[in-house]
Image 1: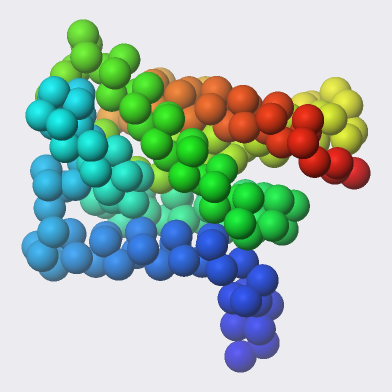
Image 2 (image 1 turned 90 degrees about the horizontal axis):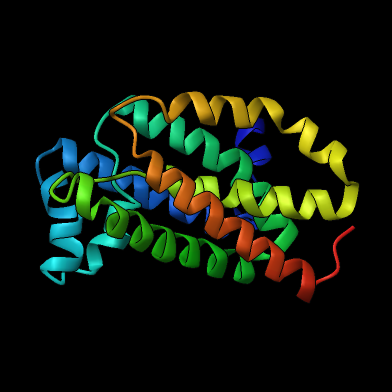
Length: 191
């Protein structure tokens, strides 16, 4: 019971809500109620066939348990930090912007190399949240904030070498997050 109290569901409604949606979709996929081909995003399905909803559904779709566990663990860690720093409303807007813009950039770039490959997962948005975090941390603490994130960047770079991972989606999310972070530090005062 004490562990549940530490989760503090009321303090992070957006993060826990997003996690819940991801988990529910994962369960429905594994029960064969939903399918990755119906939810995933590719250039051909999302843009060419004008099924734009796939940009959003893909960001909530994980097929394997390890994929879900890694993404939800990462979201739990960075999401709560960002939701607390930005407040729930701004955090939700940033999450949506990263999901849509990063997803659109990713599928557009895939046009030439893999137009039919379905991309799924929350990791592109998580990379975007890391981008916001880095910009804000740098604006408050300077270069030492970037040094403290070195291991995160190394892990991210190593992960993207796998052919099973959409590195374009990760970097599109990261760049979108950095742009969001730059906008935020010019609008809000941090530190």
